[in-house]
Amino acid sequence: MMLDCAWLLRAALALLPALCFLGALLVLDSYKLVRPRRVVGMLAAGGAMAGISYCISYCIGFAMLQATGLGFPAYSRFVAPLVEESLKAAVVVALIRTRRIGFLSDAALLGYAVGTGFATIENLYYLDRLAAAPIGVWVVRGFGTAILHGGAQAIFAALALANTDRRGEADARALLPPLLLAVAVHAAFNSFVLPPIQQTLLVLVLMPPLMLWVFKRSERAVEGWIGAGFDTDGELMRLLESGTFSQSHAGQYLVALRDRFAPEIVFDLFCYLRLYAELALRAKGLLLMRENGIAAPPCAEVGEKLRELRHLEHSVGPTALHTLQPLMHISRRDLWQMRMLGE
Image 1 (cartoon, helix red, strand yellow):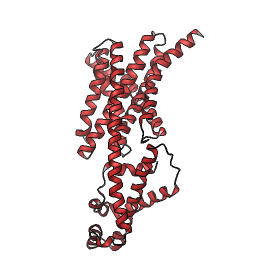
Image 2: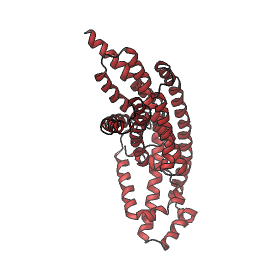
Image 3: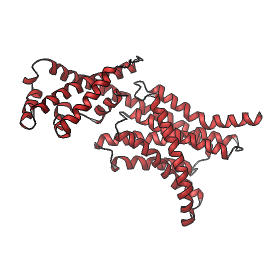
Image 4: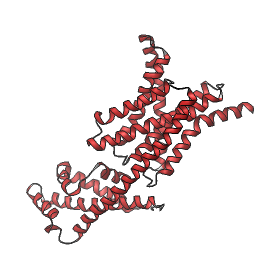
């Protein structure tokens, strides 16, 4: 019984701090940009990356040690952080490129979830291998290493998204600097520049304020985007329903497209424009409801309209659809909101 209680204490110290911090981040997400099931998915993805990392270290890492004469401490300090942060970053990059992340806060939250999943599997492994290690080891691993895994990936995710927004695409120039920063932070922790307990305290002192700042900044960005979007989308809807759309500049622009496309394509473009504006308004309204703690009931009509939108996209083709850019000003966040509606 004493052994079981001791193991449970070690397990609680190793696993709960990072998971509790993740729960606190979910509470901070006032607009509920991230659904709980996606967080669970990112925990699982991070755990899978931990398994892949172990295989790489076992198969490739030891071969590298034998070939280069590099000691295990040097491998742990310099090579392991690059492998681990790159694997975790691959999950976040996939989310960015598939438009499943809208703002800095959900980037940081999902990045932290990936890192937490990685740390959870890693600590479970060490709980099995180092069952008799003193309590101090699990304090450092739970409050230091595990939160660092999540924090380093949260930093990467937020900076990668900010760079993507600035550059317009998630290319190497947008992703490589944040990745190198995450690797450097991880490598510094593994190098034990300070005693382990002091490093753990440093992580606990720095990480919560940093995440709080990211969430506050993101909240202001969401508010600004919703306000501007309501004005733009609402004005477009009023114009489309006014009966005088054909006399407006936007209407004249669509009429002029008859010289480039068949009449049925131009009509589909009009339908797409109207449907997109309606769904964009609904998406922003949904965010406002979440921010005020109102649960929006499932709406089958939204799913039907999203399917119709996708059908129109395929019907008109990418070239014709691109001609609507001057009227819609579609950004990465505007495309993200359509994914959010479908979830």
